[in-house]
Length: 78
Figure 1 (spheres, rainbow, N blue to C red):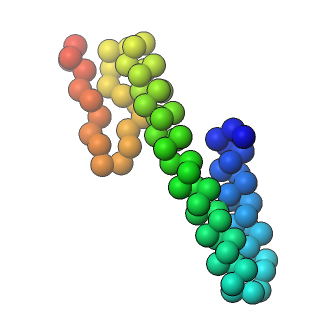
Figure 2 (cartoon, rainbow, N blue to C red):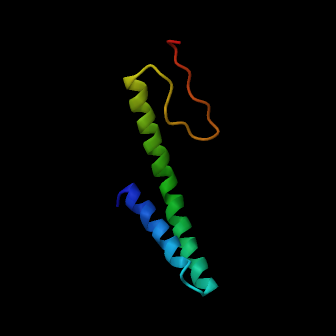
Figure 3 (spheres, rainbow, N blue to C red):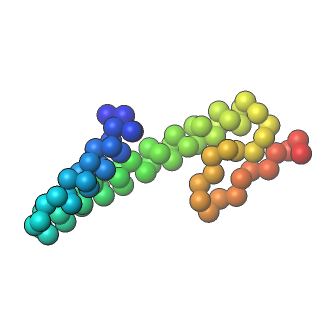
């Protein structure tokens, strides 16, 4: 599956879980959705690095994709 399809599937599971009135069923569905999201985080980070690499190769400007907690890279050209 694609990254967006995986994310949509996880969000759909969360949406469906709120229609269930059994707390244990909700907990199981939320747990499954969280597991899917945890598996996607490394894929998102890999895509971010790839996009930053492409941006760095195409322009001397600082990165346009910045994760929280990181400062943007400074351009050596000013």
